[in-house]
Image 1 (cartoon, rainbow, N blue to C red):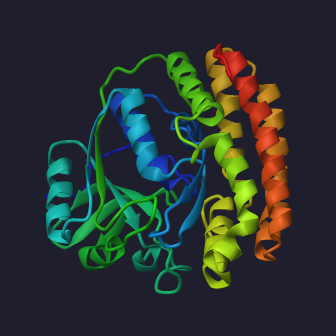
Image 2 (cartoon, one colour; image 1 turned 180 degrees about the vertical axis):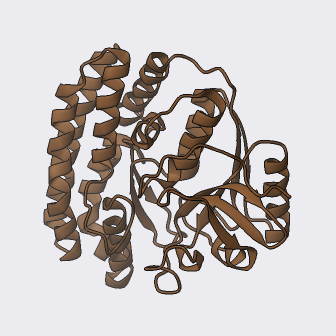
Length: 337
C-alpha cells in the first residue's frame, strides 16, 4: 500500500491530457514547466479529420492532439519509456497501475467518465464526460489517490467509483481501463532543443503530412466534403458528426462549452513561453494563430445551425490562416515548408 507519493502539482483546469506528465517531469527533473508549455510541446497545435464508416460517428474532427498520441509523442521527445495498457479487465489494469506506483512510476489513468468522480460536484451523477485523465499517486485497499488537473489537493476516490469511471471507450482517446506508464529520465535535452524539435515536427505534420487525414490538407479536405455529408450519411448521422465537431472546437472538449478556441489559445501560450526560453520570436506566427482562432466561434455557430456552406467557408479561411502561421514557424526554426 502506498498512501501517496509527494509529487509536485500545478493545477490548471482543462489540461488533463498533459497535467500528469507535467507533474512527473517536475518530480523527476526539477523542470517546473507550465501546463500550456507541455501541451504545446506535445504537438498541441494539430488537426485531424477522420473518415471511418464503421466508427461512431463516421466523420470525426480533432483539433490539437488526441491524448494517446500526445502521450506517445512526449515520451519519444523526452526519451521516456512508455507502456500503454487498455481494453483489459479492471482487476488486471488496476493491478498494473498499483505495480507501476510501487516501482516509482506513477501511471496516468484514462479516459475516465467524470460522471463517477465525486469531487466534481457539478458533474458527479449529472453529466457523462468520458474524456478525463488523472495521475495515480497513491492507493490503499479501497481507495485511489489522484492528482487532478482541476484540483489543488490530492483527491481520494473509492475504487468502486474508479471502476465505473474507467469503464469507457472514447474514440480517439482510448478504450476501457487504459493506463499509460512513462519512465522519465532524470536528465533531459535542453529546453531550446526540445522546443526546436517539437515545432519542427509540428510544422512538418501540419504543412506536409504523410497522410491527408491530418494537418492543413485535412482542413481543406474537410472544407470540400462537409457539404456532402447529408447526401453521403443521411441527416441523422450527419447531425451526430456535427455534434462531435462542435464538441472538439471547445477547449477542453465539451458540447455545452463556450470556450471556442480549437486549442489555439493554448498553443499561442506555448509559443510565447517557448520563444522566451529559446530566444526566438514567434510573434508573426502568433498573429496568424490569433486570426485562425477568431474564426472558430463563427464556425461553431454555423455547425450548430447545420449551415454547411458557411462551415465549409470557415474551414477554408481557417486553413489559410493556419498555413501562414506554420510557414512562419517553419521559417523561424529553420525548416522548409
